[in-house]
Figure 1 (cartoon, rainbow, N blue to C red):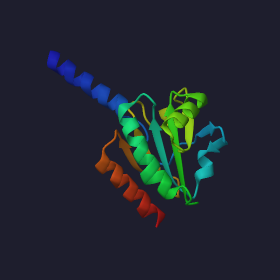
Figure 2: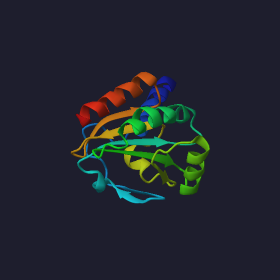
Figure 3: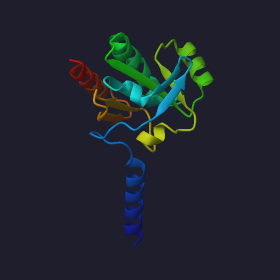
Figure 4: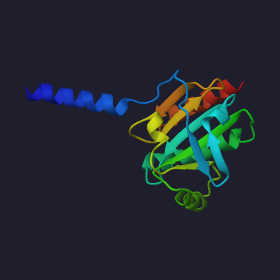
Length: 162
C-alpha cells in the first residue's frame, strides 16, 4: 500500500509540474514591459522569437545567459525577423536593470515579478527556452541548461530564419 501511495504521489507531482505549453501549440497571449516600453505577443507575429525564462539566483541560468548573449543575441539582434525576450521570473524592472549593469549584458530583459507570464508557459523549473515560429506556434522548448541542447536550439533558430 505504501508503494502504491508513493507511485501515485510521484505521478501527481510529475503531471502537476510538467504541465504547460507544449510544442506545436500557439504561443499564449501575454504582454511584458521594460524600460523601453510594452511588448505584446501579438507584436511578434511574423518573427522567429526566443523566449527565455530565468532568475538572477539560478545557477544554471547564470551559466546559460553568457551563451545567450554571445551565441544568440550578438548573432541575431540586427535581424528584423528575430526577437528575443529574456524574462526575469519573480524580478522587478529595477532588479533586472541592476543585474544587467553588474553582469555587462545588453540582452532585452523583461520583468515577470508575479510569474503571470511564466505561468502561461510552465509551472516550475528554470531556465526554460521556447522558440516561436513566424506563424506564432511554439516549435521548440527546453528546460535546464546543457551546452549540447543549447547548440540544438541555436540550430533550430538558424533553420527557421533561412
